[in-house]
Length: 309
Image (cartoon, rainbow, N blue to C red; front, side):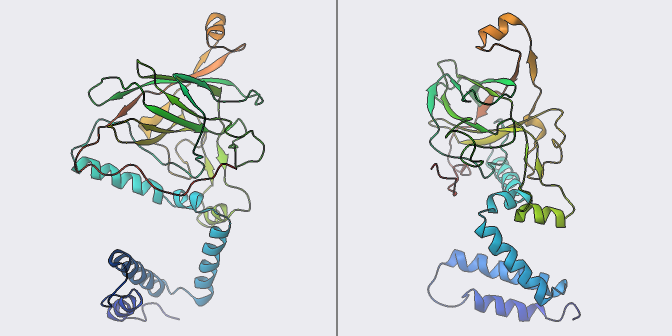
């Protein structure tokens, strides 16, 4: 069939009818968003001459993605999660908020309830032969004053790119910890250097990336939630210099200001003081939180997470 068979007025009228515009009852916000989505989807179908087969193949893809519980991968893969962060950045600017550590995507693999400790924690269970790793830093406010008692929630993959609760190979909460900052605002985590990961070979997300001519790989990274009373919650992560996929992360999680260079520590005294028996890698990641204030965009996001079994 040829493209552009329908007039905009025809599509607008149909979208309004389907979304209940002008009808009593229902949720006004849901109606507005549904109406706009339907109208724009109808425009794409008509402008691109989407065939019946293509349309229903798309519906089937969405259904399979939901069945696989993959939207947490697909959404960042098509840049929507990064778009939400960029939009929140702009909202912060308009509210006069500046000076905090940059946010970036949460990703799909957070699990609540990780063990909590004061000041420092060992994140791994000792079974991973990967390179020993120390992550340390300080949490402060926009004014530079330290924030004691902040909660630094950290999670990352193992040396094979797998996450506990996800890969079926690791102990519960392996490489997942919450650390309360000490009186100097500091935190320290002993762990192993994570590897990046790719979407499963048969996943809908990888299928979509293949169709777009893109890869479905993530560089190595470490996730953070940082929160403290009176401050806005921060969702962020850091990546490592030199990673093959650093600047082509399929999930659009890399931000230049959040890239760290690992220090390789080989001094025997430093190795002993760190609690290791062999050379280790070290990363310093200091965090600046912004204060809660009237008119500040919300940063605490209610969303579905992986449940601890």
